[in-house]
Length: 163
Image 1 (cartoon, rainbow, N blue to C red):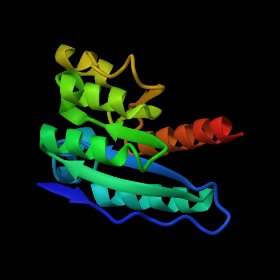
Image 2: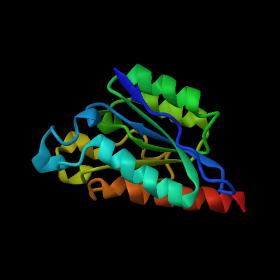
Image 3: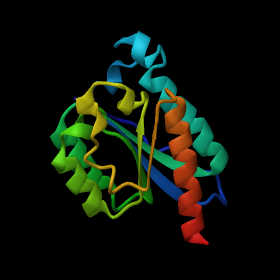
């Protein structure tokens, strides 16, 4: 089951950037699932914080969450022509999904990979990211702040490209 939100509009005179925020499997359970590892912040809390930050920056965000690899791939394909960049937490698909990797490559959009936890401090199978070599940056280990740091960096990169 997927969860997409409405686009949040940027104020008049803003940079007119649109960034897709893509959340992978089980992130809909944030706040409930393993709170000792992931904290009590919910996905709604994360999205609300990003929305506030984006509004101040004059940036439009498109939020999407899915537990299915196919839904994530389809969304990346469909949003890529309407966005300037992608902020993604592929979650468990980080380590396994060639399909998400290929969709991100096909999008040709600058992408930042984020994770709530430091994947290198976890199980060995989580140390490998199939998208690490195709993203412009990876931010992890700061909990929900990883998303804001990733968004800030992506906005700055996109604004540099526009100048």
